[in-house]
Amino acid sequence: MPSARRAPLTRDRILRAAIKLADRNGLEALSMRKLATALKVEAMSLYNHVANKDELLDGMVDVVIGEITRPTPGGDWKAAMRARATSALSVMTAHPWAPMLVVSRISVGPNMLSYIDATLGTLREAGFTWFEVDRAWNAIDNYTYGFALQQQNFPVNPDEYASAAAAYLPMLPVNVYPYMHELTTHVIDGSHDGTLDFAFGLELLLDGLERLRNARG
Image 1 (cartoon, one colour):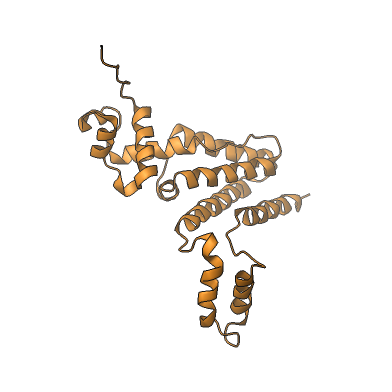
Image 2: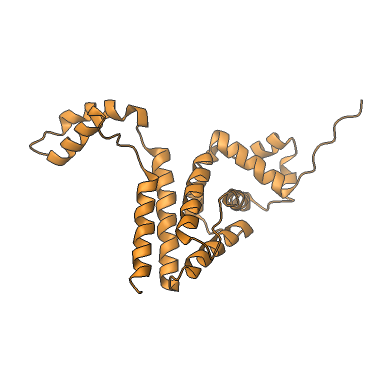
């Protein structure tokens, strides 16, 4: 029987294989050699499509950014930016290695440029000044990527908050730390779950931006 034809090696296939490896084992485990093994090719053949590891990482970021819902200028700007931020958090959670790369590298891939341009257009068409547009999209992104990083690295799982709070309560005598003590007791008795709430902070940002825009009349 003839052997099955192997899919041709392309830049897109390389990037998606690299993303799969990083999702499974973390970015620190990703190497050109391991990527070549996963693709069943010689490592040197990868360099016909990506010049080096840095270009590979930039390409991975651009593919991931392409998974995020883009806002559409001219419609309900708050709904569009809310959907954008919620989608971005979901994508960053699915690819936990991505947030740090996004915030630490200058990406000029086509997906990133289209993503930013659509975001700028949505805010500008909503009536924000260029100064406000620049501050607004950076504030939302700082919150989104920062939340993703905190969520991924928080040392206690949500289902352990009550027991962790009970363990820390003796360190918070009510006469020394009255407010921390009271909040901790709410977590212990279940009247407050203490979990991170992305939507709460996002709505504060969006409502604040809306008030800023409306203040000009």
